[in-house]
Length: 281
Image (cartoon, rainbow, N blue to C red; front, side, top):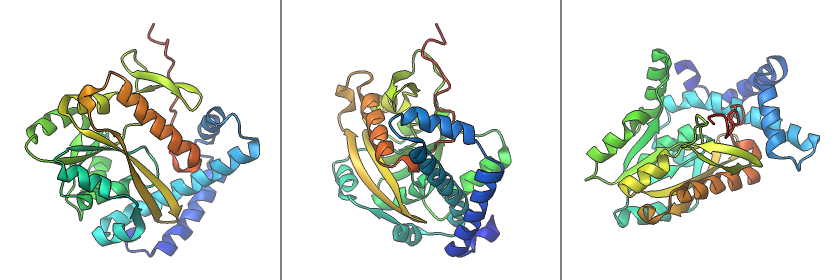
């Protein structure tokens, strides 16, 4: 990976095109899962449109793979030159108001690169929540990639409440990837999403209400190879006053609108709809 990090971008994307041919055409990596997800999410689209989205998704996935090693060498200026922020003033104002912030980002654009930018956005203490993986070597590699050349603290999901309580005297800007597949339990938040009954983890709502954090949706879309645009949208600034489920519903609708306008930018290769609402009955 260190060797790949010194490659120029044009060479990395040439490799990405080769990986696309291998993964999409030869190995057919998760093609059945991706196609089924797309068909169920966009029943109004014909077969040609679905296949076009599918191919663009796999191209994007391969680009993400070759962009990852660059995190070993890219510094603040590197991310600033490749990620355009359209309304940074929103989060700057939240800092000036003394607000803690959850950055709610779906698996879109290049979420790893955005995490590396968080310490640059405002004087908030930059943090990101992650879930530990079983492979210790991969765990160490990902933690290194996510924290090298930047002041970003990684917090394991099981300890995030305790850590944020410890940091109650500081102003924090915390990245949360809140669109992962949940366990399909009754206590999850269930709602229709992309024409399908879908369960969601409620951690971001529970933490925001408990700790009084503002939630900002991060709209990160690909504008070219290695080029991204980010805009922020305020989801809720008064979480303690919100009814249970209201924050989640706002977040889900934000994710849905993003996907409908940028269908190839989301991570379709996961079995997002593997649970049924009545499975625990």
